[in-house]
Length: 394
Ligand SMILES: Cc1ncc(COP(=O)(O)O)c(C=O)c1O
Image 1 (tube, protein in one colour):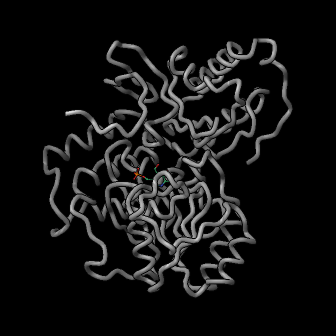
Image 2 (cartoon, rainbow, N blue to C red):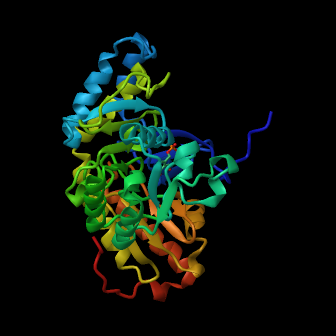
C-alpha cells in the first residue's frame, strides 16, 4: 500500500530527538527551530514528560468519558492557574481543528445563530466547519462551502464595525488567531482584539481566540490574546499542549453553560493525554519557559533586524516570521541542507521560527551565524555585514 501523498516532504527521516535537537537515520544532528510545526513546547523527549507518560502507561492509558477521570480535573486546575482563567471550563479533544470545530458549534448552540466572522489569511484547521472559516480556497471542498462565513481583512477595525452594523444580530461568533501562523506570522493588534471584544459584547456574539499555534506560552504570555488586556469567551488550544502527544482543548467562559450531549468525544481527555498535558504545564512552570521565550525571542528578533536582506521581522516570543527576497528563496532549503537547521515556511517567501520554548540563547546565536553564512553564500559576503538601523516592531 502507498501513502496518500498530501504533503511535499523533506528527504530526512528523524529517528531520535532531545531538547532542541533531532537526529536522522544516518546519525546527522539537526537544530530544530520548527518544532514539528510549533508542537514541541518544552523540548523533545523532556525527561519529566517521558516519565509522566511512562508511569501513566503502566497504570491505564485509556478509558472513555463515561467514567470519572480525575486527571482531567487536575489538568483543568493547573491550566486555570497558569493561564489565569481559573473560572473557565475545560473541554478536551484531540486536535486543533477539532477544538475550533467544537468552539464554533458551541457558540452557535449558545446564541442560536449561524454566521461567523473570520479573517483573511486565517487558518483554523481542516475539518468541515473549521475549514469553512479558513481563508484558503484550496482547502475548501464543495461540501464545505457555506454562506454563513463573513471574511474580513485582518486587523481592520472599521470593516469589523461595518459587518456588525449590517448583520450583528445574526453573528454567532468571531474567530481570530492572536498571531496568524500559517498566514505568515501576523500579529493581531491590541486595538483590533479590544474591538472584537466590545462588538461581541454589544451584539451577543462569542469571541473565539484560536490559540492552537500562538497559545500555550509561545508568545511569552500564556495566550497571545492576553496582550490585548481583554478576555475571550472561548480559547482553543492544541499544538504545544502535549509536546507531541495528541491532545487539544477548549477553555470556555463561565457564562457559556454546558448541556449534555451537545459536545462529545471518544478519545479526548484520555488518561495518557492528560498525563502528557500535565507534564507540559509542570515543565512550563518549573523551568519558567514563558520567560525564556520572551528573552530568546527578543534576542532573535533583534538579531534578525540587523540583517539587511531580511525584512519585516514579525511575531512575539518564540513565534517569529520574516520575509526573504526572491534572491534568497533557497534560504530555508540551504539552512537544512548545509547547516542542518530546521525552520518553517509560509508562502510566499516567509520563514517561520517555531522552536521549543526552552531554546537556549547559545542555539539562537548559532542559528544567526548560520543564517548570515547562508545569506552570504547566496548574495555575497560584503552585503551581509552592513549595519542596518531598525527597531523591533513589538
Ligand atoms: C491557528 C491554527 N488553528 C488550527 C490548526 C489546526 O490544528 P490541527 O492540525 O491540530 O487540526 C492549526 C494548524 O496549523 C493552526 O495553526
